[in-house]
Image (cartoon, rainbow, N blue to C red; front, side, top):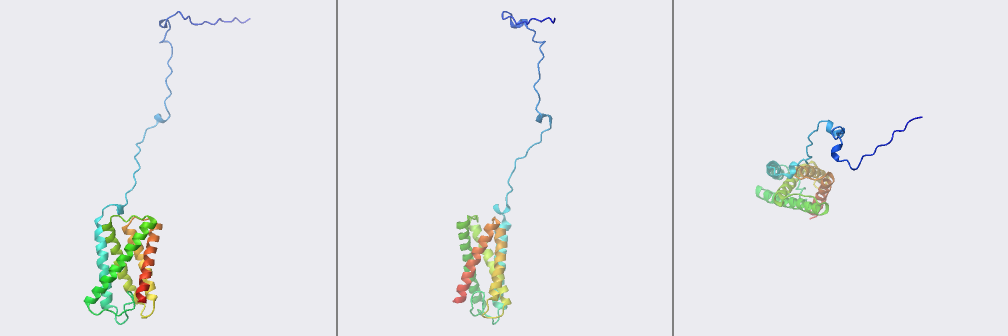
Length: 217
């Protein structure tokens, strides 16, 4: 028969000093798996700053002034040297001004109207789409330069149509203005593609209405 070993229970009267603590093995805590591998420094994710959000002299001053100068020069040159006997079709079916003074006066009024149309389109886009154009001063200079440059180029494009009563040249020039406004507004302002397309569409529609009014008068 198998002999049974009696169970021994600790005597509650014995003190803690009677137990051999040193003889009891201490189990080490298991180390984490992650701690066994070298750590890499995690750099915080920073959003890239768009250059159009900062103050750039080239974007905010130099390029707008160049576009203004080129647009005015193109329009004045077209009136004085490249519009012989064909009428001023871009600003309506009126006679070509004779002399530098009248040409400058006409160009001044044209550029004021073009800038106003561009500004009105920007205001409508800001109200409907929430587009941010930045400070009023810089935004006005950029919008005016874009409008003046596109009008200057369009006045030369309209000369491809030599018929005095045809609108083929105007239609082609208006398409060129759409492309130029798209490029200039996309360069000057931070807009998404949908906002840019809708803003250009609004400005183009206003230009078309103004051109129709000038021709009707």
